[in-house]
Image (cartoon, rainbow, N blue to C red; front, side, top):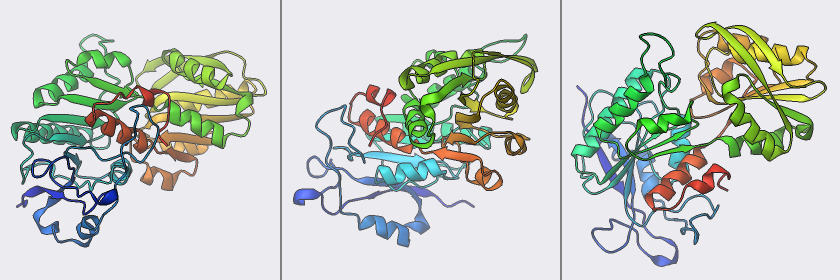
Length: 384
């Protein structure tokens, strides 16, 4: 039988300047660290190390300040994560100076009062996607009926995002269904990254912050591709034209796109290159890759058209089925993905996969949301 888990508030002993930090309802403007822990873990060495934390960052003077790590807020908030902690959630824990621990997937009970608190639940739509989605809905509802003031779902990779329209007879619009489920469960706000289609935001009647990995991608290109000034940004399909033109404009380089025709889902029939890639470094940019058939065919097309090197940069690397073997056999210099989806196991089987850490963007978005600050700065900058 599963034992109940509790939200344990871990106070910081002293803030800079000697100001004590604790529960704001007890003695003035204070803040606290929070964690979801099992009862038996309350005396664990890890928790005791967090109890000894005594440093806080002061909040920036401007809402658009790039200073990071983010300051802890002036009022308390709770952060929870999924049963299987990902690298992204661990990084968020470090950046926010919060101890984030898992909640059991089939029994959720908040063991301490969250009444009036600002709750952030981190869950990505990957892996066992249906189990993770159900777990997220239960956690949202558990916090909502426990009278938390606001529940924000932080979903780095939105589940079922590709099913955003009825493109065939009797096909479901699953992204709309997921939006309805999150709203009915009690979510007050959604933070996500690089939605497959921006209009998914319109499926919600609650605020949605769709963050972009583009600033982190631009930074990676400038730091890791020596010939980036002689590169060309390529979209593997017509739907990504807006994404690649934005990156090309900011790098001051040209762009191209590939028109593809599919026989069925995840299977490409024919590809046509529009643009000149001869004697240039080609950088394929897309929001996600599943079986990697498209980007591998695109890489072959670019090399046959005269490209000197081919890179692939993806926000969400799903890498299902034969994806890893296809990447290993393809002529990529590197396949770069963000950690919205855990990649540790995939990297063991494919040396070409590299990861961009976007946890600092999500952490800063959480801090700004809680403090009532603008998040538009994050659309074009990476927090320092």
